[in-house]
Amino acid sequence: MEMKKRITLELRNRAPEKVTELVLDNCRSSNGEIEGLNESFKELEFLSMANVELTSLARLPTLSKLRKLELSDNIISGGLEVLAEKCPNLTYLNLSGNKIKDLSTVEALQNLKNLKSLDLFNCEITNLEDYRESVFELLHQITYLDGFDQEDNEAPDSEEEEDEEGDEDDDEDEDEAGPPGEYEEDEDEDDGGSDLGEGEEEEEEVGLSYLMKEEIQDEEDDDDYVEERGDEEEEGVQGEKRKRDPEDEGEEEDD
Image (cartoon, rainbow, N blue to C red; front, side, top):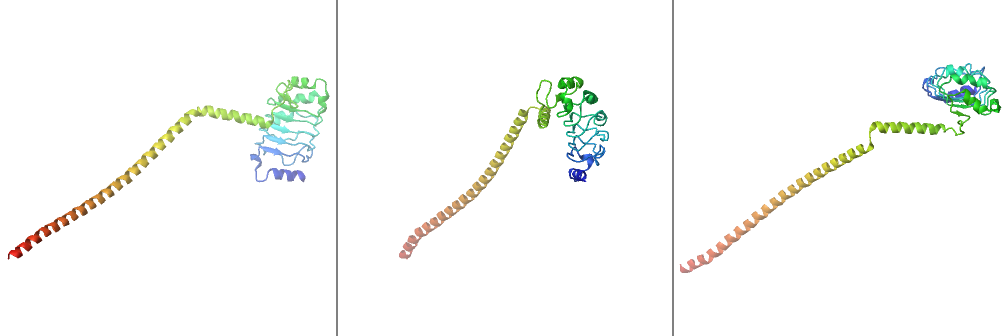
């Protein structure tokens, strides 16, 4: 019942065929099988079944895309040959804390051609003389055993590996995209062009308003000129009247 609840939590709102990672640690297996785990998880890449009292892998479903398998702290003592058939693309296998005692059991992993990392820590096989040298000689494809290579260099963290892969992808994208300088120059040119365009628009706007102001000013100047001219004409008329008035007075006196 506990196992069913755990699977339900893991798969809530997700269809099995879309799941890529599944953790079933501390669930309980029955007759070497975990109920609910089947071949419908065809996209699964990471599966963890630590401490589920698993005694055999015979009922493990076919998971062709599985790359990492965690089986630590179970009761597995053999039958590892089924992994090459059901999980042919495994690169990481953790069997630490199981009942593996001799090299003949590990020999069955030779058919896992993509296997790079194997963990047998806390298994009885680690007590054998020249254990590490013997396993590396038996499994030529692996690079790391119990977290270290043959020169005792520690295996990179899984997150570091993903970061390195991401960096490589980024480098490839940059190479395909071309040198970044070209884009910067293009952007600068585009910015310059846009600035120039804005400047020209501003000049046009200023020029238009300036012309409008000039026209208004010209009209005002014309009005002033007309008014001044009118005033001068009035003054001239008044002057003529003044000249005529004395003459008229003289003629009246003669009469």
